[in-house]
Image (cartoon, rainbow, N blue to C red; front, side, top):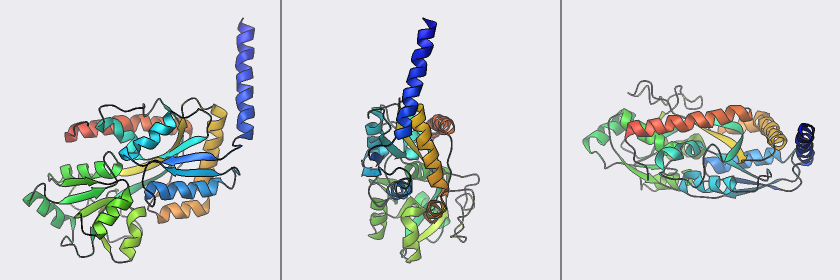
Length: 319
């Protein structure tokens, strides 16, 4: 009986290895949960273009927009475990359990995590004609007129949203949160003057800063961003110790054969390290960072706990 079991296990591993050797034989569905033109959409396309050089079957990029990225997560969680459905997940994936009473998937157990891709700070941004010249100006009015100023973000439960909540609590001030279905919506709202400021990644705002349409007041990382050396950190602007770095990673469905996950991991890590991709990511306000499947899985697990603690301390109610 023992010999039979060992033989069976060996046959399964051999079959999985054979499948991985041929993988992929058809296009891979590459999902992300935010509107076209935003941070997640842009980075997923950059990665797909590079990985297609190795995975000749190519990728089908798909935006499953809504619920702070949870719709895309739900699709991948319920897909066939064959490695042909992958997603670019954002910080929102690990924040969701902190803000939702129930999810249609388990953010840790229903996925096979492949690798991290990048990490990046957010920027506090106002329009070119804004009366706010510094974070101090913004905070002063937020305190004097609590609940009147509006901040636009990429959606409820996103890293942008949580960064704005931490920003408000750090300065003991209040605002009105205006969620959109991705960074592009928040950017459009600021361009039209429909919100007072936005919290957004470099991908969404650098071109508008260069064009003189936006002005960055601060950055959420612990260091100033190299291409905007005159923009202070939030920590420098009156909130010592403040730091929020968002991140992205690649995941597929739970149960995908380990050799397939390993093959995906090798390709993602190659793509992230490719000079052209690394340069593009840096230009989009991201720092390229890849990892092993085990490391990213532990990161997801730890971040779920972290954001639950943050939400509890900030008094954010689950919806």
